[in-house]
Length: 306
Ligand code: NCD
Image (cartoon, rainbow, N blue to C red):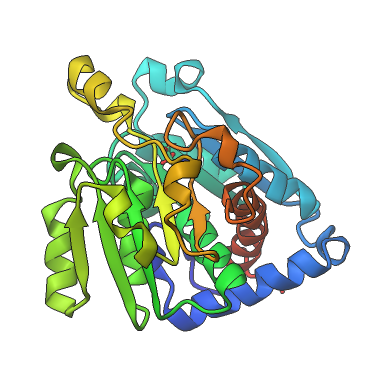
């Protein structure tokens, strides 16, 4: 029997395994129809203890496009969690019903606890401010598709670098590729956590921390914008003070390279002006499309379906 595999962190897959995953996502993009029965008879459970639009619907669409079915909950207040059931017990139950589970949870590490008790593959669909591996797979596939490779570029990450799990996951994943330079753009209250800069220092990966977006704009090949994570703030006042710190608009984009791409995991609040949506460099909706292909590829890979 094949070993049970989960996806908790983008580093759970080697760089070579990620290459195969992205190749498979590329094949799916070219031939959706050819994959439309690969998961006939399979069931995906989505257990979402935190709000989501894209991630949950993207997982469900991925399974439906593969011919499988979906069940689960989008609101933990409707599940037995409201009665006090533990994640460990819930996943044991889900393991009796479904073939694979995507779980989002406000507590860091909850999907790992689930994985340790599960008899089906568990995918971390975001755990608190910690990791969001499938968003990272989406981001990597988008970069690879737009830029042709996952090496030798300068990426600016802007906004809430403290609480943004997509940022933490992406930096982690990119730290394994050659020639990446990071520029972190945030107010000082929302700087990237020390454990991440420490990891970069140890690996000798160049990074810079700045406050003003305009200053470094011309250097960037990618600009990864993020939302200020309201739900992870301890007080409303700080959130209100910081929420509109960065607003990317036409004026700032005039400073960027002709071929710099704007990425955003979405949802967007105010940090990218809608006037940029038609700019050919705005890649955030394309990113959503890549997220579907890569989740289809991940489901097939974790279920060992060729
Ligand atoms: C992100 C998340 O949930 O961390 N959204 C997503 O899954 N694409 C980003 C965010 O909520 O800001």
